Image (cartoon, rainbow, N blue to C red; front, side, top):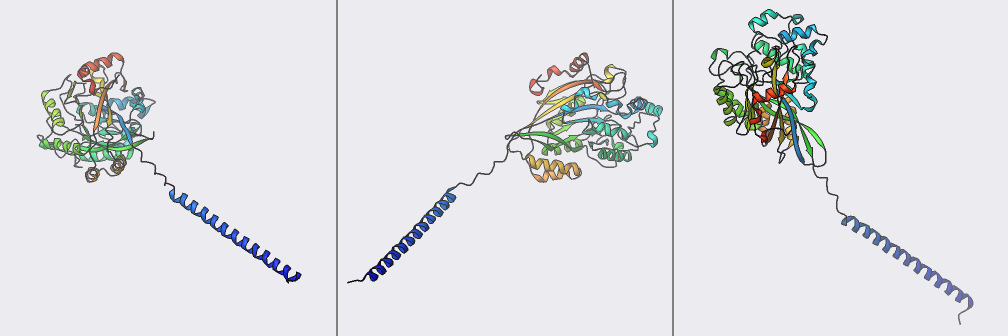
Length: 422
């Protein structure tokens, strides 16, 4: 028989074995549970879908509104009145707010004088009146910069201060003021003796960078610095040669291009056949978006040709022929651009625009090398009659003058597809 002590000892061993077995079972179960939890976590982690990256915003519209203005300068009698006024250099610009400049993305006008610094801004007004040798003082430029984005230099007065020497200084003053420019007073074609007027050998066309407003599907908007082509065609006493038109075509191949010729018979209410044939060729052959001209010092008529606008003369926007009537009024042309946004890489165009602002000389070459598709633009236009009668201060004209200028332009004949909806 098993003794009491042996029985006790066996019982203890059995209890220890049961406890050990229970402990081992717990450890095994805990391990299994941990493994299951780990497996579950792992499976859940592996089954989670990576979040999709936010889609790139897509452009839904791209628009721009600019004002194209006629003959502009602040020399001769305008300067006399300004210097005698408390407003000083602000004088000729002091009522431009009547044209609501903040509603535009850019203003572009024909500057009909060089910008050469004379000692003490000295002027010989008798000589300027008799010889028509003009100069505009550069100290007006900070005020001009508040309104004007770019100036056309292709006319018959920007060479008045030493030809190419004065032009070089003019271009420097404009660059220093942050105002872009384009065009040259150099003739081509028939008037051979005039070919050396611009020693800088500038072309009649150049890139002008304008801000366009791009809206995206995520409700954001962005201003893009977009290159546009602008071309002069100077031929007051003749017709520019084919090289001018060929150059327009070169620019219009890569960027939307506007022609702003400076020519035509002065003080006439309508255009002549020579200008009509030439301006239509700029559209048919060169492919420009529109032809918006000045020089005659009077407003002339306009026409829609192949669904593009031709304005034969905008008249005097800021000039010192202030006697009233024809001589002191103008048709400032409002141009609204609606760009087809499909497949347009606006970031790349913006990079090109910024590069052009830094380096004009290589601008077109950079655009050519980028091999971007040329922009397609829909245009709509309006006109705004201005006057500077009596005081050489440019301002919006009254209702009667608006109607008179509209009749001169024959604006009622322009199709609705080209006009801003009222």
